[in-house]
Length: 252
Image (tube, rainbow, N blue to C red; front, side, top):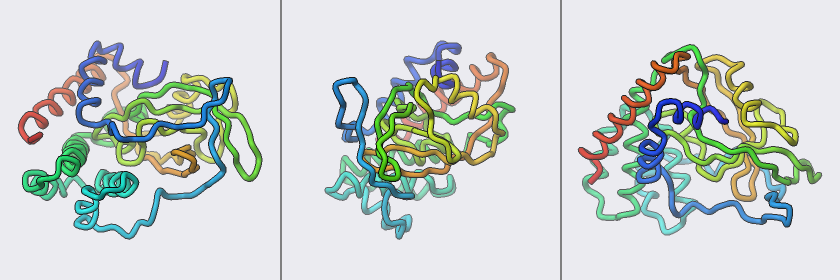
């Protein structure tokens, strides 16, 4: 049982919180991984990069590109904005209220929710390091350094808005390793969780991720959450209520 699913089931708010994520924080136009083999594994090419595209973006240009007719451009612009400082929230809300593009409005709302909750997500919120994603483990076949190999991957099912991971990880991403090591076959969800929890809140973990046909390296800062189940439950419920209130007030 992975870290996020375990927490949500313990608190009893899994359906409501994931429903909120599905409404506001999942991209219905995101392309799912393709190339399944007869064995049910996913086969990816060997293209490798350390970024998802050129980084010559500014806040203004990224907002404008959210209305692009190309999904890849919109996605890159949104990722850039999700990593902005929470101090950008008033500007994002200003653009959200002025835009006439439904696509741009949808993405601006996701960015606004991310920045709003980021301001309420202290890195030192507890002693347990937390990635902030829901995932399932499954085997994948990938070509690395010219060689095809089978490894285990954490398929990102959902990301929690307001956590640093939401700025860089997407649903359908496949995490194939961390800190220079590829997950061997039969790596379990608990194994991945233990690797994360061996670190400290505030640490930056570098993840190897299969995104489409590309292998990308992404840095994610871990956030501390309470170790006590009751305190963790209360924290998630407060975030759920804050997100619902924000969407009701500023969600057009």
